[in-house]
Length: 384
View (tube, rainbow, N blue to C red):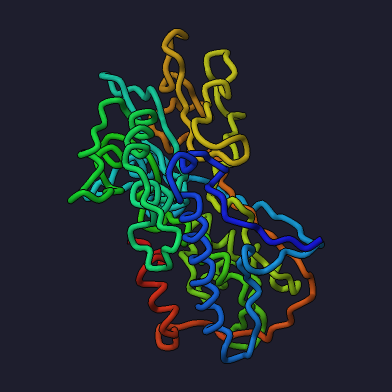
């Protein structure tokens, strides 16, 4: 039987919102608006060809019985940093562990990490997060800080819950005033930059970017010779939905687009989230111990990990920095990140139901107003 979700759930069905009045409803309102905003942009994009959007909001449009899911996966380490450093690990590993001048992490594959060291500089703990900033802003304020959609749920958030989570996962020393700027949650507070990683803070790493890339990838494109574009880099460049040098954007784009080529209606699986799928420790040597035992899921669950840590208990007499990967001692958190797989899950149904004509590539001169506004506010992913 065709189904329509009653509400969007929090990533990995995490339970933080349950004690906050109207917050579950406010989160549904937020995610639904993101879907609708991107659908409006698709309608504009397809106007010239009289096309039908192949992306849909599953809380408004039913998912048909023939639904299938697709896990789309990519490597967590920023490929842009690898390329910038000539694919030389002696250069790109230390580069990735350095914060930008404003305290923002440079990890742009939807996975960010914070590396801790002892007094001798040996790595003791690496924490990974893939939680979108919108979630934490909503937790604190009711809705994301740049949210402009309806607020009929009246969600207000809870700074008490916010503080308790920071104290649990970052440090008991966190104070509420550390997390605020002029009384409003500051995502770039010191405990989410220099002193830790509570959630994603790289500007391109957002849940709305995930939705936007999935939506825009559903448009079938043609090259200058009128032939369908079926190559990842060319599709990113043609549709203007990301950076072709990344692992994530081209991978998401081409896999979604190939579903669109089959005439499917396409959406994302609830709960909407960017997830750590797994850590592959097959190349690790942990002094005779199983290296996977030092990987602990802190938030989320297996297959939908939101937060995890790699740490050796002090009772074992050695540290993360004593473990090797491919014969090299762990000196940087990025060495672990290179072995992490990220994922999102798409949903496709109603195969062969939509037969759109091929659309021309987007260019700076012909972006419509909706697309320009989307690019400016929350969807552009630019290498700096």
